[in-house]
Image (cartoon, rainbow, N blue to C red; front, top):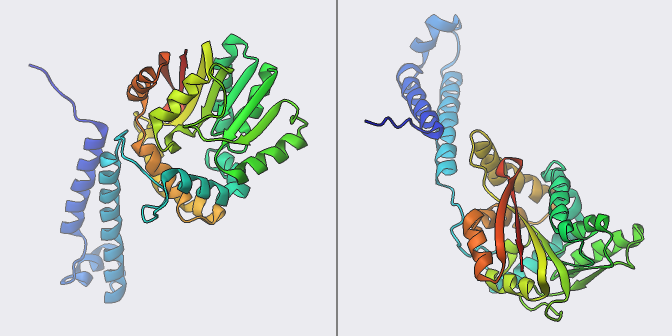
Length: 320
């Protein structure tokens, strides 16, 4: 006979349910507001209105907690659903993503580092270390944005780094950073579609992408292009957000990602959809083994997924 212990989520949800029952029985109701408090608090003179407000606030807090738990437990995980920044727009996902990033380009770097608490810099270093195993001389950074990953790759002392992105304003911010750091002679940033890369087959030793593949309109088309432009024996590294599995990081992450991040992102970026789209696109992304299988279908070999920082993000690597 086997014994199956309940999960932490189930235990927590049960405790919330029990507390809500106790509150329903013991807190004052509309019919007995004064009786419940007069003998306990010594403040029998509290008005009926104050007690009703207190009771309502306590009941709302329990209800919100219950709703939050259910939201956390029912959140999707790699459903493959197509998510766009603005569901009401007639534009393609590609056009919407370009417009969104062009709009927030000036504040993107600040938000990127602030909302990730600076951890994203360490993630990029790990991705660069992976492609560094083959000492690449020519590197392509897809969905380069403002060029952070391309700049991080300079530690490998390559001959040439090319970054491509569909958002011109993001590229402009990146070019200013390159000029400031005197890197324009090695790193070139240009407009380019991940699904139709303007490079010859086998042009690069390594291909990277940080938090961009979930924005591809056609995921496999973009991955096949990344494979095409990489030489045989080349190495690929992709960083993408994922879903922590362990308690309590899982619960804290989902709460932060669904409620705190969109609110702060909207306040700073002044864009109503950008940081609501972010968690939605992450929830729909086919992570882990599913994504590794996708890489294999697209021509890569030895696809591996390495969770970083409790699984907040995942580093995917593969070879051609």
